Amino acid sequence: MPAKVIVRNLSKRYGGVEAVRGVSFEIEAGEIFGLLGPNGAGKTTTLECLVGLREADAGELKVCGLDARKHPQEVKQRIGVALQSTALQDKITPREALKLFGSFYREHAEPAALLARFALTEKADARFDTLSGGQRQRLALALAFVNTPELVLLDEPTTGLDPQARRELHAEILQMKRDGHTVLLTTHYLDEAEQLCDRIAIIDHGRVIATGAPHELIARSSASQSVTLVTIPAVGAERLARVPGVNELRCDGATARFRTERPTETLAALAALLAEQRVELVELQVKKASLEDVFVGLTKRADGVTSPGAEQASVAPKASAGSRGSPR
Image (tube, rainbow, N blue to C red; front, side, top):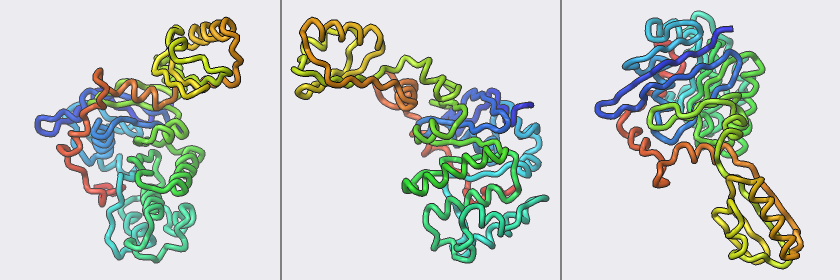
């Protein structure tokens, strides 16, 4: 089956700022694909070029088998989009919004079915300005599904939501996959990406710097593992510091914590030290590197400062969220 999304050498510049430079990735049909990166790294610009809200300067964009640059209107008939925030008239109701947005498409779902699916039936006739943040996000998803899309693009859909609302939206996103939809998700929540995404691309300074399944990126990463050690009596920081591979050592009484990039060698040397000193091992925990460790390691500069891409956010103007899902 051909890829649902193909992006090759995408570039986009805002004045003197090159927000996206040579981005390439593919999304297979039926998968949840995550686009991760620091603020201003180029995630939203990439998504907006895909859906036709921005005109790419260069590159190939294929969406649902169509050339998105040549046939933007036809692409909009086949995709659903939820941007970072929902901008609707204060007095419009969810039922009215779904009916209005449905009129933009050749085929569309009935408002009642979408209200039920996204748990908005009780708020169907409530004014938009009375909805909670979670309800607004569920309405945004309902609007993205009004045309029964093949591909759903979600730009940081859980930003600002409370934990309960986030869990509810996570369940909806996973249901999208079970229903056969392909999902492109941008997020800055690393736990969210690790939980939801089949594959991810990490973008920084407008370039893709890593692609793969979360567990694959973790496995091939050089990110260090964390070790917690409790002994009787305490070993002492001076001796532990001489163990090969020990970094970022912190000792608090009988508890020691450190990181190592060579866990096998480090733990073997540690076991020999404990035996030599006749120290009782009370507790030993070794935690593998997380996706967050991988992300930070890939995106921070040599001086430890995160990418300056955040400056780009103020340079590149946001597209109006009011155009969400509209095939303009």
